[in-house]
Image (cartoon, rainbow, N blue to C red; front, side, top):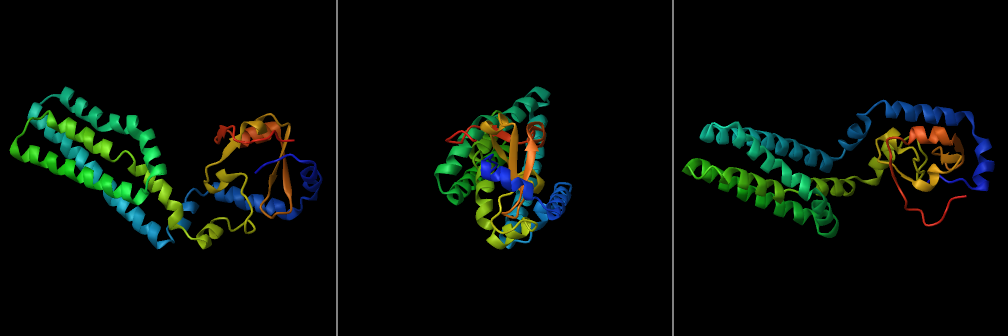
Length: 241
């Protein structure tokens, strides 16, 4: 984590030419957005997960196309098409935060299985409505229920990914860092970075260069520019000095 202690101020002057080579590698990593995916796809479990997600997403798009075509064929009204689209999307927007809570507090694998079962049930009901010529009003209702049932699914997928990756894969992703070194500028590896608000008030910030030995000195404007895309928050218990 970036700090500004007196000891770091002394060590910061020990930067060597190899630091420049490390930073060059990191810049190259930042310019190659495919690197994290290339490393991740070496894992069999992640490949299976991604393959399942590709099939699932393709099915979702075909379902959406069939749903709107069914509603328009039955009503001939673009208003009904708009209502159905809204009914399919709004639950995801409204229930998204609740889905995150479910993913944090319950067994994620179980949540994903239950979500898939409920979505399959709504799809079967929707197919029954289409085949039996049921009331078209059931289409947006079932579409909304289907979306609501899967509200926690994306959060669960993101949460289980770290458990599917072994330590060797993580080491390979940060190959230009010594083992255990913290990549302070995580954006270079497409790693989400969160900056404590205390650092925004610091005139100078020192970050680790990836070798447990050297530090990189950043002026406040340099640090702010690098962290523009990072999330900010207050989570440090004590002021930094």
